[in-house]
Image 1: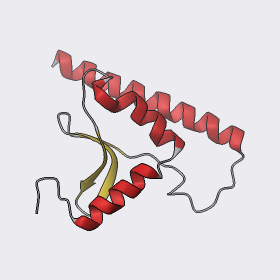
Image 2: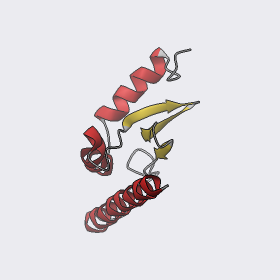
Image 3: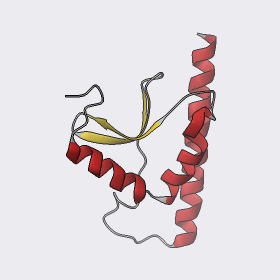
Length: 107
């Protein structure tokens, strides 16, 4: 097994998940990619055991798993509320990552 726990099936699934990501995942990835937040580098759709994490930063051993359309059983919320919730979640995730990076820098 490779050091990233990849199998052909997981690789194919991870590619599909990246391609079919939710709006929240795309927006968060836009902020996380290329070390834009505190220089931390993240991976998208990272295999971890029998799961695939939405985002993973190996340097911080930090996994981020977002709820999104692929997890929802039904789509009962109206679009306005959904956009507001997604925006709030994205801002909370970014704030949490910044706090974690600040704490790591001072430690």
